Length: 136
Image 1 (cartoon, one colour):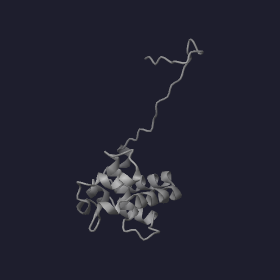
Image 2: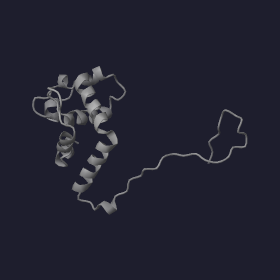
Image 3: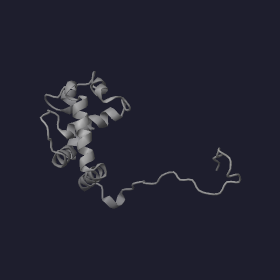
Image 4: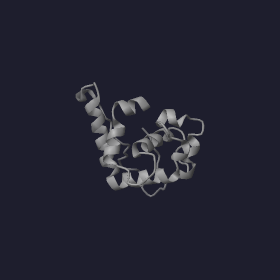
């Protein structure tokens, strides 16, 4: 995953769109990458517990020279999340997606993005009930 993130230059795009405004050592791209990895198995935890996810992981090898798990603290994560909100999460996601699509060796007309959601419609026999039976 790290190789793909760097090969597609997603890190460069993120750092271009979200330049650091403080003196912490972790660029926003590294923080976002760490959050993606964290989301695979440590989601829902308090921000101050974020470094614990990387307890048994070689952060320097995974995230770059000089990166320690202590660098991925609640302040860095909070700063990155605040920066994403100020920039616009949808705008950032769209720009990352378009950036990746421009670098894929697959013609874009061959891709399919399923953006549907679950919806329920129809009439119910007894609309006064508080329970709904979901059936085929």
